[in-house]
Image 1 (cartoon, rainbow, N blue to C red):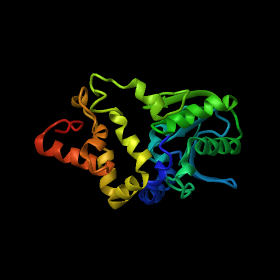
Image 2 (cartoon, helix red, strand yellow; image 1 turned 135 degrees about the vertical axis):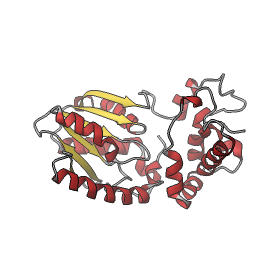
Image 3 (cartoon, helix red, strand yellow; image 1 turned 30 degrees about the vertical axis):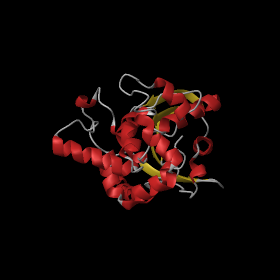
Image 4 (cartoon, rainbow, N blue to C red; image 1 turned 60 degrees about the horizontal axis):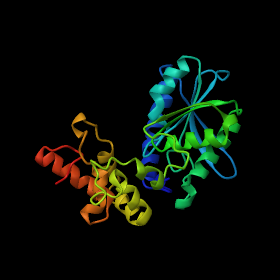
Length: 266
C-alpha cells in the first residue's frame, strides 16, 4: 500500500465533502436521492458514511479509492438501494468527515481493514458484498480474505486482488517489458509509487503546494489514443526533479502544446 496517501489531499477533500454533503442532504429532503449521512465512532477511529436502502435489505459496502470520497459512489448507491440493497459508502480515513490521523503508518492496509471491520460490526455484521475501487480494492479484497465471514461477495474495480499484497514486489512481475524496457523503466507506470516510498515528504509538499492544480491533473479524461504509449506516471524518475505532481503537470503541458498523447512525453 502507499501508506499515508490519504494525507496528501485531506484538507481539500474535507472542504469538498462539506459542500457536497450540504447539497446531498437538501436533495434527499426533496425525495430525489435516498442517501443519508451517518457517523460511527470507536475508540480508534471515526467513520463518516452514507446510507441508503431498506435497513432489512442485504448489505453492500462501497469502498472508495484515492483521491476520492464516499460521494463518488452516489449513482451506484442510488441504483442498488432502489433494488432493495442496504447500501453503505464510508469515507476512508484521511478523507471527508472521517478521522485523519497524522502519521503515514496510520494508513497501512491493516488499519484500513480494521476500520471497515469495526464499521461492519456497527452495521450488524451480516455478510456483505464489498465493492472497492482503486485503493479501495485492496481493502475490500484483504477484508474478504482475512475475515471471510464478513463477506458474501467482493467486487474489485481498477485494482485486482493480489494475495501477496498490493505492493511493488507483486506488481513488477506483471510489467509489459515491450512497452517498458527494464533499462529505461525499471518500475514502469509504478515509478510514482517508488517515489512515494523513497521521498514521501517531498511528494506531500509538492501536492500541498497547489492542491487544486494537482486534483485537476489527476481527474483527467482518458483517451483510447493512450493505448500503447508510456504512461506519465512512469516518468517521475526520468525528469530528475523527483516531484510526482511536477512531472504530471509537465507531461500535460507538453500534451496541450504539441498535441501529443496525454501519456507520452519526449
